[in-house]
Length: 261
Image (cartoon, rainbow, N blue to C red; front, side, top):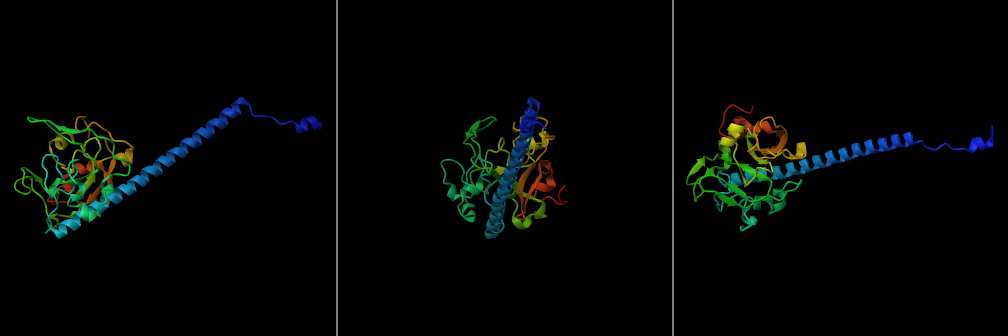
């Protein structure tokens, strides 16, 4: 064998180099996808922890108040009994639930982030503009009640439900992480006109799809836009459920007899 031939080294051809670059690209894409999924899962777990704390705080509050829940934190009417004082000109530490949460305001925010939101404008005969809601979670108004008027409990648009009146609390959703494109206050009301007509569930799918569908109530049809979101039940159990379940009365109406669907 010629020593000159033995010492000669063959370099990469252009095709081989391109193949190596392609393989590295695929591996990097898989790695980044895995990291993204792991981050989303970690954020979901942290979000569920937040909502579980809120659920347990609500249950403890109810036990301390003859089974009654706090006011819903509605945009239209403000009450001292609101579970969260979220408006910019109110002291958030004065919300009735805050002492049960150790005054940790960050518990009210999804770890995935609370994006900048525009002020909310309600339509109708008398349009009104409200400040943007700065948190991620809202309470089921079928537990808190949906007041009409300036005195909490004087008149009800939706009757409240005490903790001991709830039928099968392990199946009734108490609070949710609400879709960032739809949330405008601390109150969530499933079963209203928009939900019934458009079949729209407003639980956030950010931890399942990585983004919201968007469009609020304006996009029809919405029923096919499936995904899962974080909720807490009236027994304190937190879960990651299909958004279509929030459209079913057996899952959100605490007075409903017949179980979940």
